Amino acid sequence: MYHRIVTLSEPIEIPGQATIRTIGLRVPRFADYMSIGMPFTWVEVGTGGYQQETPELLQAWIERLADIDPNFLALLGLRDTLELKGAIADFFREALAPAPSPSSSGPLPASSSSASAGPTGPSRI
Image (cartoon, rainbow, N blue to C red; front, side, top):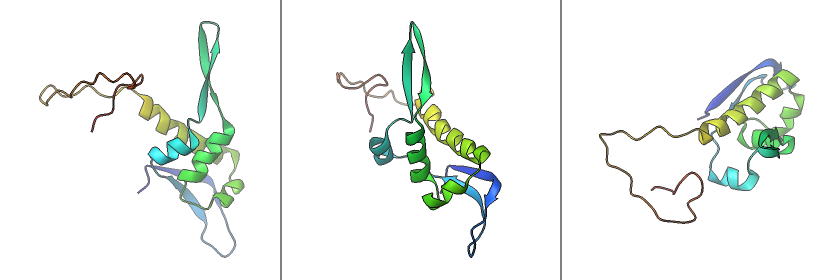
């Protein structure tokens, strides 16, 4: 199952094969992230900063998650390329967004004193 479907504004026509009209992107998993990493870097400027894209990593993410042969991606137009890039960015924005607060009716999660828990807290299994 694909989490994101991008409908191409310019379908890819491949002689002797079906025309590609959509590209599905599957949900990134642990191995994907550990292999490729974040597609953006944080650049500090003075007291602030900004997020900068890393095109090579965005390409690696698209090639890895797309449901088509990566060789066909070279045939995409700019609009469709940017749509795929945006879909990859959405995966990360959603994953980095604050998690909804737990329901008051359920049990509270166990706390951890692990120093290696990181900025988002400890894993919970």
